[in-house]
Amino acid sequence: QVQLVESGGGLVQAGGSLRLSCAASGRTFSIVAMGWFRQGPGKEREFVAAVTWSGGSANYADSVKGRFTISRDKAENTVYLQMNSLKPEDTAVYYCAVQSPVTGRYDYWGQGTQVTVSS
Image 1 (spheres, rainbow, N blue to C red):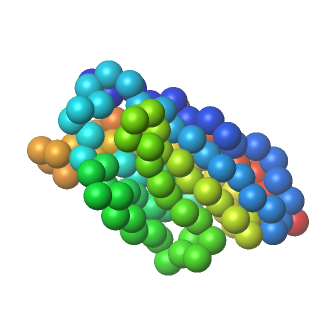
Image 2 (image 1 turned 90 degrees about the vertical axis):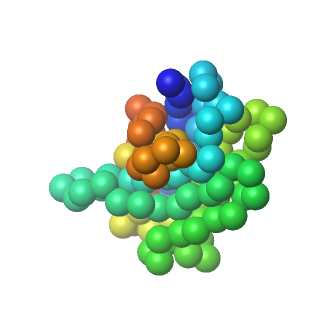
């Protein structure tokens, strides 16, 4: 089992920045990749970004490329999402998740943190 706790959400004006953090505990030795997802009002959950744990390779949804940066601190078992040039359409609950090395699915999820971008 891996436990995840997100933090860093809040209210920000359009064009502003926020940094989300996600701290992992438990069987962290099994982590091969972590990702951020979001679910906006009335929308389905969508992928935002992911990073491999060993090499730090990242990939992003087209909607956030060039504005968001995902990174990880292996020593702290923490993944970050730096969000710049925020837009009202970025408003959502943001979740971090751990990808299973066996199934490839994201099997462990945090409780989510609210990000609200005002226009």
